[in-house]
Amino acid sequence: MTEADLRFYDASMKWTSEPVDCKVFVGTNSQEVKEAGFKLVR
Image (cartoon, rainbow, N blue to C red; front, side):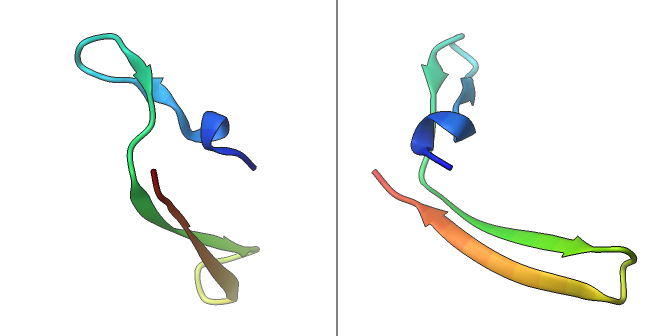
């Protein structure tokens, strides 16, 4: 995954990204999940 994968159009319709802390949850139900995280910085 790259920074470009997390870009979006902001309120000014500029294609951009912002610094963010993300958590990702993967599992077959809400009680049995694996968790990972990443940080997008500029």
